[in-house]
Structure formats: C-alpha cells, structure tokens
Image 1 (tube, one colour):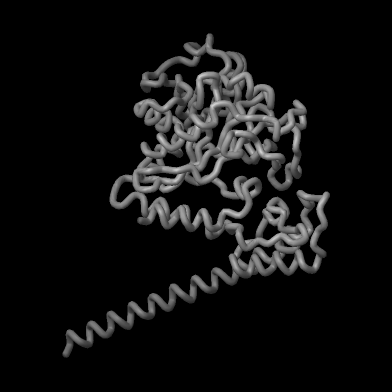
Image 2 (cartoon, rainbow, N blue to C red):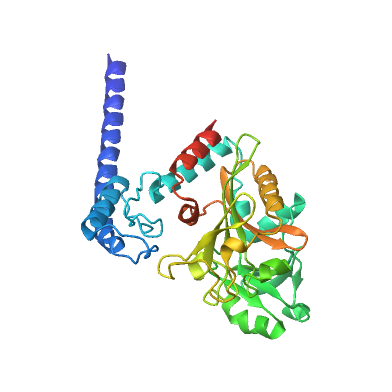
Length: 370
C-alpha cells in the first residue's frame, strides 16, 4: 500500500513538473512575441529591395508582419529582402529564423548519435586548420598562434614576435571570431606591431592569405571573395543544399562578409552568378553590377565551381557528426581552398537569392535524422 502511494506521489510530482514547465514555456513565448511585435511595424516600412515593382499597401504589409510574428514568435527582419512586400508575393515557402535554428540544433544532435561533437573543430580556427590538413583538405597555412599576447609557432613552440618580422600579406584572426568580428589583414611587421596591444588577451591565429584566382579579382581585388556552400550530411552521402558567392566592396574593405557591407549573390548550377547581389538590411539594397568594379553579375562565371561543390561534399564527410555546414571557400588558380566551416550559418542569404527554402530545409532535417 505504501509503495503504491509512493508511486502515485511520484506520478503527481512528474505531472506538476511537466505542467509547470509548460506554463513557463507558454509565458516566455508570449512575452517574447510581444517584445517582437513593435518590430513588425518597423520591418513593414523598411525600404523595398524591389522599388521597380508594385508594392503591397501599408495595411497589408503590417498585417503580414504581425501575423508572421504571432505565428513564429519573432518578427521577420528579412521581409523586404525576400521581396515579400511586393504585390502578389507570398511568404508561405520561406523558412522563419526560429524554425531554422531549432532544426539546425536538432540536426547536430541527431548526427552525433553518441559520439563526440565535432563542432568545436569548426569553431576553433586553429583546430580547424589542423583537422583539415590532416584530412588532406586544402586550407591556408596557419604559421603562428597567439595566447594572451604570447606567440607560438604552428607546433606550439614558444617564439618571439620578432621571428615573424619577414612575414607579409597574412591575416590575424580571433580564434573563435564570427562575421569578421576580429579579422585584420597584416601587410608587414609594422602592422603586426601596431596590433599587439589588441591581442594581449584571448587567442588568435596568424594565417597566410589565400591568393584568389585572377578571374575573381575582376569582381573585387581588395578582398578574397568566397563561396558559401551549405552541405547536408546524408548517411555518408553529403549533398549541396544551397550555394552563393560573397563579394567584398569598398564598404567591407578587406573582407567580404555580408555583415560588414559585402554583397551576397546566388549561383546557378553551372557556376554563373544570378542577376542580383544583395546587401544585408541596413547596409544597402540590391545591385546587378559591382559598385566598385562595374562587373555585371549575370555575365560572371565562378571558376572551378564544380570542384568547389565536390570539395565541400568531401569535407562534409570528414565532419560526419555535424548535420549541416556552411563552408567558406576561396577560389585560387589551382582550385578551391577552405577558409572556414560554420555549423551556425545563416539561411537568410540563401533565401534572398534562391527563394523560400522551407521545404528543402524540412527535407534536410528529416534526411539527417534517418
């Protein structure tokens, strides 16, 4: 009798716990949604990426943005980037951010299946270099490592900074930086010396620059213009879900990152760029020619694109327990070279150029889970 009573209490406690967690989750979702609602109005009146087309009236745009926020608990800051403000456009095929991030997290969990997570190999640039090199995958050489202002060579032997006095044309990067948060191009020893006060805390790598193919210089010679190729791990048979080219501008300087003012341009299957390149909201709208070099995007074919696609799939095989990876790949005269891999890439860039990817992402998530 006492045992039955004890089990009943345990069941009751479990039910109360589940109920409490449900209430907390519901309250948090309501608060989060209400916090996003004001932004629904802001995004409804954001500048149109398609001013040449007829726009929905203000009431419709507000209604659609509020409805999106209520449905997905986050306002759609890419409403105009996706062209959803254009008359006749529908957002039903577009993936919302919350669903994307939940799916990406689940894909990673489903891929691990009891093994050790490989995501740290992607997030630590020094370990990424070592792992890629060990697997015969091309990546720029890392020749020095910095920890709290102290310098080491690639074998972790301590060195004096003066040992690098003859080095030229390379990058100084935070070991875990994202979106070009700390990436400095170093042309000579004087520039490295000038950066020393900035690297007294934390970890950094010094990495050779990938010398891009001359054809890529025609687009923008001041930064390495990199491919972003998203691969999905499908039971040992990876495939490419989406691809685009990121191109630097005078605004982004020596990097090509979208977050720094670079352009994102979709790529057709044959390597030819699509008509428009897109700026991140807040940095600009769209363009069909490069703002600095004047190159027309739809006339440009990315060299070695087929090799880059194959290389991305080969690299995904080496990261067998990461469900999906967004690869940053430079194009050299000899072919593709991996700059980094991202397990927390954005989907918005790809939806801007390729349209809604909701179904493709749903298929990708179910593929990894099998």
